[in-house]
Image (cartoon, rainbow, N blue to C red; front, side, top):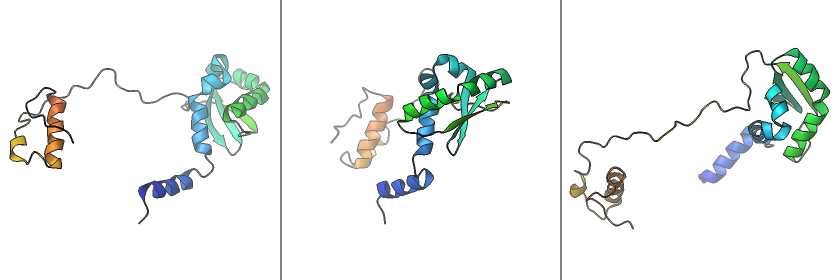
Length: 155
């Protein structure tokens, strides 16, 4: 049986053998830094096909303008990557597609409210205090009652 780190490495190598997916994700996350805020407000990364970067724009005037600047965009992106990752840029209308440079999931603001279980700590006296399960349970109790009476020394 293989160790987990080797099996995971093999699996990841099959998913992204040359690292291009990982690199493209970095391009999308840093899009505004790469091309600047003005260009980033006009065009957004929406995909890639081989060595072509696919950008999305809201209207055809922007498509024409960005097409004239496509060589400069390729230079900016390739310098960010540190290699010649793209050869050309293709600009398309967004048509409702989601650009890849924005976060779709945000973290909730504020801490989650955690309710204390009703019979918290009642099992502690039924366990051997030196057992790993009892130490884990004591830590669980301390999560809800930091100054609770069921604290045991961690080893």
